[in-house]
Amino acid sequence: MGIILAIDIGTEGARAGVFDVAGTRLADASAPYLTHYPRPGWAEQNPSDWWRAAVQASRTALSDAGIDQVDAVGVATTASSVVVLDGDGKSLRPALLWMDSRASEESAFTATVDHPAMAFSGGSDSAEWLIPKAMWLARNEPETFRDSRMIGESVDYLTYRLTGRWVGSRMNATCKWNYDHRVGSVPVDLYETLGIAPLAEKLPQEILPVGEVAGELSAAASAELGLRPGARVVTGGIDAHLALVALWGASANPVAVVAGTSNAFIAELDDPLFSPTIWGPYPGALSEGRWLVEGGQIAAGAAISWLSERILGVTRDRVHDLITRAEELPAAGHGLLVLDDFMGNRTPLRNPRLRGGVLGLSLGTTPEQLYRATVESVAFGTRQVLASFADVGVDTKDVFFTGGIRHNPLWMQTTADALQRPIGLVDGENLTTRALAILGAAATTGSPIDDVARRFTPSYRTIEPDPDAVGPLNEAYEMYTEATALTGDISGRLADIASGAHARAAFPDQPQTEGAKS
Image (cartoon, rainbow, N blue to C red; front, side, top):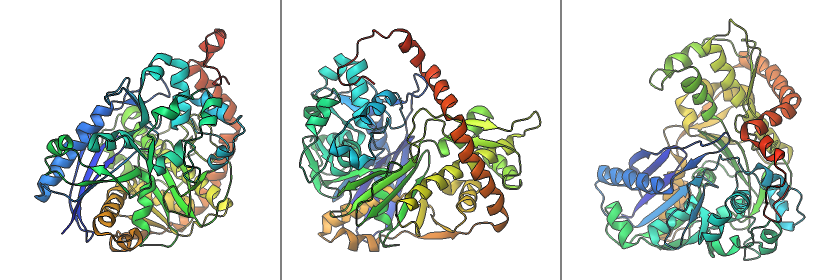
């Protein structure tokens, strides 16, 4: 029976799953790595840490499953975690993590460019994406940009470490590089306008659809993973986006919400719908002939854990008590309103300069009140994104949540209450590794991906909203949207101060890369 190794490189660590082609998960394991925050709004990781953790998690899962030979390996990673490599695949600098927002000025410049490719990203590229980050590198670290031979994303790096081949995923290229497979090449003229013409030669030159074989597992990678040679490496993509594949057996038009450190919202359409409040529609990014759309919250679980661990000093082994106390409070009955854009707003506002805030604080405010208000704020952000989907015609009837949210009953229930509707919750399951197993099984058996997905459908349960919470949360949501609009300008100015933008304004003669000025 065919065996698939699935590797998911997330924000906090690597996860590995071992599956058979019938859809049975044989073993799981994980391994952590660190994120560094050298300046406000910056976030970096060491690409070699991804590989070290991937090897560690894979070897543990394979050992637990009693496996030393697999038929296929699939890998998914966070999107837009950008690597800068020399000709031997060695990092020239730390990777710019997806949540790194240093390229906000470059992002704003993309909104001024008239190019047909921009229509598929809502008119501009996010500060999170590879293109603005490459612009920032060319502008602020020109020698590193010049000397690099390969610039890509974490999934490209992992595929390279697995196969020795510098190939890209159509999903990442379409969603983050302004690539259109119907044209067959990256938009070189757009890159020239943006001041990063050399990027076209540094990106992977071969772009493969999701699910195609990228190459064979190299001898070196086989040895490190403890596997016999011969496995095929299947082209993966963005971890949250691939979760949609695992839900194809549960709904004809699922909306996948991967709710963890951040929240990612993914859906597919038969016909393109254009709006500046969503990302996409992306032609053929996942399925041939369909259009992928996405939205997201930059800080979701990260905002909740930031409050409990770094501000309130509640360690993870004690957070259950805090959650229990917060659950005992009535919804929106604490007189607090938290704004959750701690690292900017991904969608629908698409504003990297927004920052978080708390209104209504008093000397009598308790930790559990502040915790509950923060959870409610994250749920409000979720409602805002799904509303933007519905506004442009996305079918949001079948919404499925997966990820870290399942470990926090307050977050889970508050989300259903804020949305005023039942939601599907996938229990105890990493949908990304399951989706990779589906792709691997399809490549191994020759079966259509849709057919395999039906065999791999995960179990889920329905979370019903609490009728007593719906009304108060609805009123609080209206205040949330109003407060975000009212404080946006001040929030942006504070973000500029924290990031040092005021210092740049004091030295306007600082050299800039042509085409990257904003």
